Image (tube, rainbow over all chains, first blue to last red; front, side):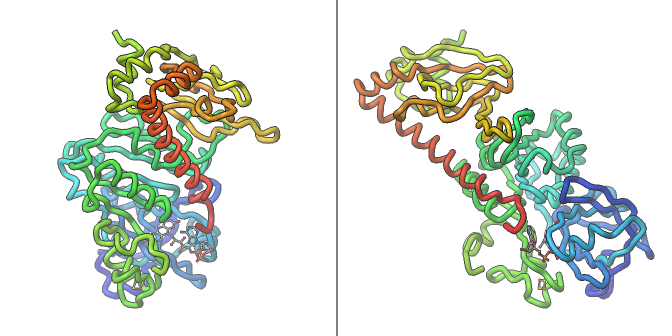
Amino acid sequence: MINNIPEPMTPNVFRINKKYKETHDTFTIELEPTQGTDEFFFSPGQFNMLYVFGVGEAPISISGDPKNPKTLKHTIRVVGTVTKAMYRLKRGEVLGVRGPFGSHWPSENAVGKDVIIIAGGIGLAPLRPVVYQLISQREKYRKVVLLYGARTPEDILYTYDLEQWQRRFDIEIKITVDAAAENWRGDVGVVTTLIRKISFDPSHMIGMICGPEIMMRFTVAELQNCGVGKENIFLSMERNMRCGIGFCGHCQFGPVFVCKEGPVFNYECIENFFGTREI
Amino acid sequence: MQTPESSLAEHPFLKDLNPRLITFLAGCALSTQFHKNQFIFREGEEANYFYIILDGKVAIELFAPERGSITIQTIGEGEVLGWSWLIPPHRWRFDARAIESTRAIALDGRCLRSKCEEDHELGYEVLKRFASVITSRLEATRLQLLDVYGAHV
Ligand SMILES: Cc1cc2nc3c(=O)[nH]c(=O)nc-3n(C[C@H](O)[C@H](O)[C@H](O)COP(=O)(O)OP(=O)(O)OC[C@H]3O[C@@H](n4cnc5c(N)ncnc54)[C@H](O)[C@@H]3O)c2cc1C
Ligand code: FES
């Protein structure tokens, strides 16, 4: 099984089976292995190190459905050297995959509770697998709410999934954008403003947050204002990475390594250095 | 049946307000409804009312000649629209347009200003609540200005 690769520094070669644009700067690739089993098991929130041969490697979250291990999906925003090179790869070309690495969203802690998922921008990519997971076992949870903030309506990811989820009566979806032209009929304002627009039980809930660090800081503060305890808030952190397996120290964040103890952390464990300038 | 007074008493903006003051406020209140796309007020007009939104959605817009109308915020159920009635020169700085059919309680700013002068307890309660709304809007605007989803954040 690919999960148990003997040498975690050696990438497995995967072929791009499908590639499609999500927005003007973000695309999704679907990968299949060139050898071995075609199933890739992972837990929502985990990431892979994707290697563009001859260019470099980047940590990218797995964005597909954990119940569908035959399709390994990654959604990538083009920002620099490696992600640009990934964007240039065409269907049929190959890249290296190491993983899955890191911690996962605590859906097991959320059983019997309200689950409030708060995503900003590309932060929806590592959260989409947990939405699929919660929906597939919907009866285990109380309210399931997804609050999603994007820059503009054109920057909204996964519009197909969002439409499907909006049609369901057992999950509440609220989307807001930071700015919009007058033809946009949805909400305008930062994602934190959506928190006051939903009802949930602050003492029986789990919050899962992923987005730019500033957005997560404001979101944590707003959840705490609503009475949510820090032990019930989970965040996915980003740091530059090299080995991805706790060897090199590149991703150190205070006393922890994001690649190993994270990327998903309980807020209580990181609050002392979350938002600290030097870290 | 819901009266303006009972709607005011149940609205989050006036949560825990002394019932005497609710009754006092209700003296300046009027139930109102806006249909989709109706302008509630326009930039530059005199700000004589503010609105306690009961349901629906309102866009706060700014018109820029080359870009058309830009929505900078939307306001909905449980929120309050407009504070220019409180602060001189009492003129709206933005346009407000219902983007869904919207029910609201309109509070007459002139009536309320004079009641706040008469009854400082009411004035203090109203100011405290608006200060909290203005602070959270300011925080949200700062976050919006940071453009956190843009590149290089
Ligand atoms: C655990 C983890 C999971 C991640 N999951 C995803 C994912 O699912 N999808 C995804 O697109 N990215 C994800 N990232 C971020 C991704 O790893 C980086 O964007 C990537 O490494 C950048 O590499 P690059 O060579 O393209 O850019 P660089 O050449 O390293 O950077 C170029 C420029 O882009 C800026 N930049 C770098 N990273 C970011 C960023 N994240 N956002 C905005 N600007 C940035 C840099 O400051 C620099 O100015 C994840 C990161 C971590 C740690
Ligand atoms: S990336 Fe090497 S220790 Fe985390």
